[in-house]
Length: 387
Image 1 (cartoon, rainbow, N blue to C red):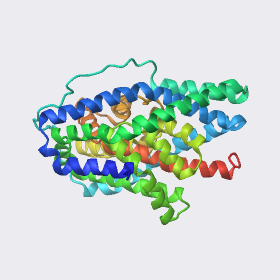
Image 2: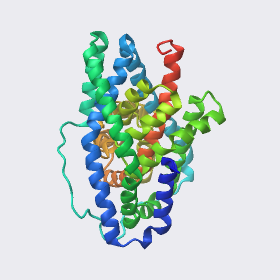
Image 3: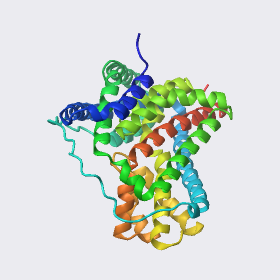
Image 4: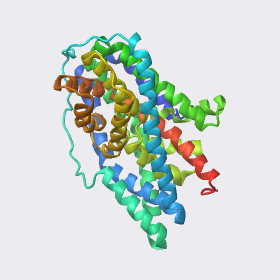
C-alpha cells in the first residue's frame, strides 16, 4: 500500500521531533548531504520547470493571456497590501499586552552540521529570469500563435512532469529529513522564543488566522469546503516549512492547486509566479517584527500615514525579492532605516529574527498561494474568461 505524501512528511517531522536526538552527528551529516545534493539537483531543474509551466499555462489562455496575467498580478499586490495592513491593525492593538525583552540573540553552541561533500551543478539560468522570459514569450505567442511552439512546450512539460512524478516527489520525504535533522540538532528556535517569545506567538497566530480566513473566503464562506481545500494543500505547507524554499515547493504546490481548482493550465502558470512574489507570510512577518522592534527600541509606533508609506514601498519591493534567500528583509533594510529609523543594532536583530522564523514564513507564503489561486480561478470564471 502506497502511503500518501502528507502522511510521509508528517511521519518524518514526528520522527525527527521524538527520535532525532538518537541520531549520531555522522548520521545527520549523511542525511544532510543527501538533502544538499537533492536541493542542488532541484535548483538545476527548477528554472526549466518554471519556464515550461508558466509558458504552457499562458499559451493555453490564447488571446485572454494578458488579462489573466493582469488579474493575477493585481490580486497578488492587493493580497500583500491587505495582509500587511491587517497586521498593523492587530499589532497596534495587541502590542501593549506583549512583553518583549531586548538583548543579543545568542545561539546555543552545537556542532555545526555540514555536508560530507558537495555537488555543484551549473546554474544555467535563475528561476526568476526563467519566469520573466516565460511571461514575455507567453504574451507574444498568445497573440502571434504558433503550433510548433505550443507542441514543443507541451513536450517539454510532459518530460518534466515525468521527472517530477518519478524522481522528485518520491524523494521529497528524504530531502526534508536532512534539513529537519540539521535544524533540530542546531536548536535555532529556543533562543528566539526567549527574547521575542510573545511577539513570535502573535506572528504565527496571525499567519494561521489569515490562512484560515483566506481559505474560508476562497471556499465561498463554507467551513466544510475550506477544510477540504486546506487538507489538499497541507503537503505544500509541510514541504515549504521543512525546506524553507517557496520555489523548491513549486512541484508540490502545483499539484495541490490542480486538485483544488481543477484547472491545470492556471495552476501551472500561477503557482510559480506566486511562489516568487505573493508573500503572505512575509507580509505578516516583516511588519510584526518591524513594529515590535520599533516599540522596543524607540518606545512608540509609527503613525498610520507613515506605515501606509512604508507599506507602499514594502508591496513594491516584494516583486524584487524573488530568488534571494531572506530576500524580503534584505530588500527592506534601506526602507527600515530611512522610514522607521532603524539603527544597525535593530537591523541585526530583526534580520536574525526573520531568518530564524523563515520556515513559518515560507510555509505561510506557499499555503497562501494555494488559497489565492482558488480566488483568482473563481474570479476568472465569473468574468467568463475561463469556462
